[in-house]
Figure 1 (cartoon, rainbow, N blue to C red):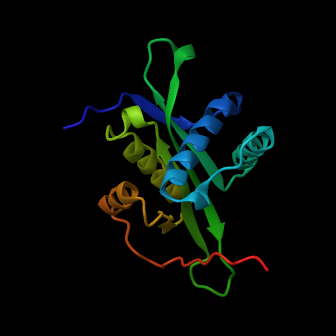
Figure 2: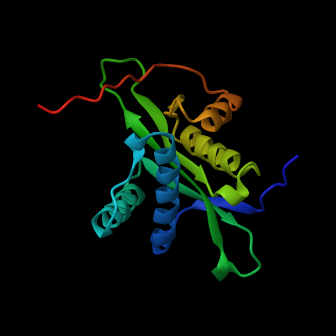
Figure 3: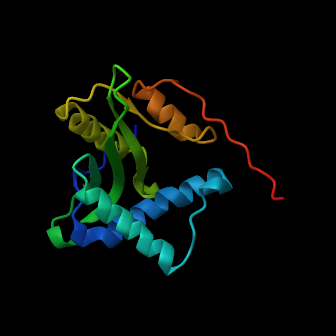
Length: 171
């Protein structure tokens, strides 16, 4: 049995945006290893855009950025080891269900994987969703992400829709 990570899930603070952006970049790099489709642009422009996206999410009342803050005796030395981004989407009023939540990103630093960090983040995200009265949550998992597929299925998530894509040739 794996050791349990010590720490707590909390809302990300904007004064730590660089550390939150680094976690998000880590998640993206992990997925780029699964499929080149997920490769992130490089350079200062991409890094600035990443921070702006996080700032916009932090201002959005229908979104939350959660982090797992590893326990340290010194609060100044806290270490962010996990990230979860969740949001509420509204559907056109032609559907009976007009709201759904989406967990858009979850990632944990490799050195603390399989220690309950992702599960703690997701449980907090699900509580956040319930608190808003939303009854359904969706997420997307890359078909090549075997660990991710197993994780989400173990939490009770199942198939809803296949996302198909095709790369077009240039003319």
